[in-house]
Structure formats: C-alpha cells, structure tokens
Image (cartoon, rainbow, N blue to C red; front, side, top):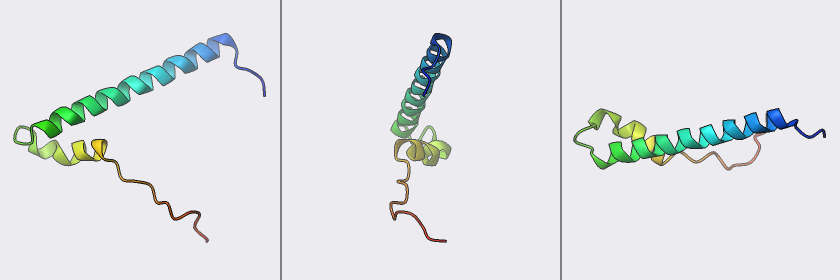
Length: 64
C-alpha cells in the first residue's frame, strides 16, 4: 500500500477534524433541545435520536 502524499494526508486530517466538530456541535444542540422540552416540543424526537441512536442489528449476517 502506498502512503498518502503530504497534501492528501493534511486534507484527510482536516476532513476528520471537521467531522468531529460537526458531531460535537450536533450533540451540543441536541442536548440543549432535550434540556428544554417545553420550548422545543417539535424537536424532541430528533434530539433523542441524536442523543440515543438506535443500535445496529447484531444478528450477524443474514442469509439470502
């Protein structure tokens, strides 16, 4: 496997960092919405989905 050239490695690092920042912002927003259910009643379901995402099925591979 060839190593990434420095510009590509730097771009990948920026992409990962921005994804983490977006995830953190989404969690912060969901926590704020969930903390004030009377103010944001229409957003409670979405906030709970962000804070408590459904677990993936862990039944193993399915046979088809």
